[in-house]
Every structure is written in C-alpha cells, then in structure tokens.
Image 1 (cartoon, rainbow, N blue to C red):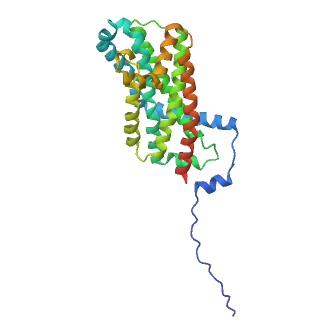
Image 2: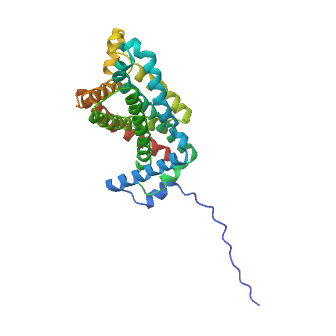
Image 3: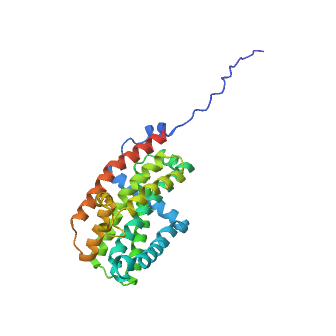
Length: 282
C-alpha cells in the first residue's frame, strides 16, 4: 500500500473590490453624445422618483400661490397704490424667488441620495462621471417649470396681462438661470455631511439675495448703501429681465446680463461639483 501526501493550500482572503478598480476595467472615456444621453437617463430616474413621491411637489405648487396672494394683498396698496398696479412688479419677483429658492432642493436631495449609497452604485457603472449630477439637476427642471406655470397662472387670474411672447421667454430664462444656480447647491450637497446642513446654509444665502433685491419694492425707497448692493445683485438683474420681457416681449440688457451670469456660474461650479463628487468616491 502506498500513501499519497497532498498539501492543502490555506484559504485565500477575499479581495475587496473598489469602484475605482471597476472603473479602471471599464471604459475610461465617454463621448459627448453618450454623456448627454446618460444624463437624460439619470434625469428620467429623477422624474420617476417624483412620480412615486408626489409630495416632493408640494413646495413648488403651494409656495407660488401663497406668496403671490400674501405679498400682493399686503404690500400692493402701500407700494403701488392698488393691487392691480402692483402685479407687474410682484409677479416677476415672486417667480424668480420661488424658482431660485426651489433649486436648493437639488443639493438637499443629492446629499440624501449620497447618504443612502445610491451614488455609490452609479460610480461603479461605466458612465460619464457628470451624468448622475447632471441627471439630478435635469429632473429638477420639471419642478422649476411647474412653479413658473403656477406663478403666471395666479398672476393672470388676478388681472395681470403680460405679453405672451414675454411669458414664454421669461419661462425659458428663469429655468436656464435656475439650472445654473442649482450647480452651486449640488456642490454644497457634495461637500457637506448632512442634508439639513445643506438646506440651512442654502437658505441663509438665498433669502438675503432674494429679499435684498428689487423683487418686492422699488430700489429708490431703500437706503443709499443698500441700493449699491441691490443694483449689483444678480437676482435683481434676473427680476428686471423678467419684467422687461413680460412688459414688452423684447430682451434688454438685463436679459443679456442674466444669461452671462448663468454661463459663468455653470462654467465655475459644474466642474467643482463634479470634482467634489469624484473625491467623495475615493
């Protein structure tokens, strides 16, 4: 009888797989067309979230109605003499305030998704790194559109008669500018650790910008030192642009300044947001 000796190898330790290693084996570059397509796919995911959680639309549905009625009937007589004369002043102001403040939700929801590990799964996919962020922002465009339509509807039902072409142009302008501003809050969502911190600090930034503007009262009634800030406030330029479009239907210098500001904000904060998002993945 012969005896055969066999050696038993010790069990190997399991190797952890990181998203960085997975992406290294996947495609390293994504074309511009694929990036756009993937961004819209992620945006569709965001729309499905709104469909299954319609309570996310409560702020964009109720806030324009409450603020328009409240500000118009409280300040209309004191500022413009009557409610009807105050409508061309207050409706563009309410519109800009509502949509810009609504963009804060972008950073808050982004932080919540990151805390739940949703974006960890996205990082392991062979997709453009900007597409999860851009998709989340594109989905919020629907929120901006709903808030805009409701604000215009409430104003028209109260007797305001804007230029039809100006209404369409104002809607596009406000949505473009809000999309640009949402990159700022996307960056905050990537940098901060809690969704509540994102919301709290964002409100501290946006409320002074919206109320210290020409959105609700004439600039001439303010102190001189405050007028200097209001005149350079980008929210004031956007409100003035909407007023010009709704009154005449033609674009003026304020429209150009608003579009230029939106382009600069996107060019600066979109790369920063993507970089912060990638840094969190490591």
